[in-house]
Amino acid sequence: DGGITQSPKYLFRKEGQNVTLSCEQNLNHDAMYWYRQDPGQGLRLIYYSQIVNDFQKGDIAEGYSVSREKKESFPLTVTSAQKNPTAFYLCASSIKAGANVLTFGAGSRLTVL
Amino acid sequence: GDSVTQMEGPVTLSEEAFLTINCTYTATGYPSLFWYVQYPGEGLQLLLKATKADDKGSNKGFEATYRKETTSFHLEKGSVQVSDSAVYFCALRTNTGNQFYFGTGTSLTVIP
Image (cartoon, rainbow over all chains, first blue to last red; front, side):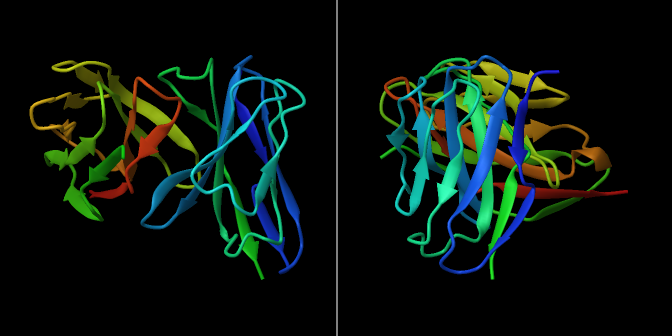
């Protein structure tokens, strides 16, 4: 079955360390997104990519970086510059930018110790 | 700017009770409106959508009607089940951009 795979599901990081969250999709979708979910704040967009080798900052991009070297992969790096990285991170994709339906992965929970 | 405001939870209902979760939006132009559902430990799944005024989205017994005059998209279900326990997110996508805007989510617990 097609879908989005995020890994790892749980991740612990010490302060000052960078960490990379994986997102892979086999849906042949052009657009991919990273959201951060915090209690009581809903989902906030970190970065999105409309096509390979292209990406744009979302509302809360500071302290994060991404790459889109392959259509199926959109990894997110949480850098040490991110002041409060403990959160639930969700990757999503859509068939093209501006499409009406987002397909989500199961998420990765990052905890900074 | 574009935004979604939804009813705060948590909401606790008995099985077979009627459910309403309120959602209002602010947007330029004519957005598409959505309800997504998140079951524990999972990502979000699309529950229903409506792309123009007066459209009614429906799925699994849930319904929501796009009301332009009141800028609302309230979620309803006539008889909830324990399996409906989840967090529900209202969302919009404007027709001028590629971003989705999500509400803060409403947690629903249905007790037998």
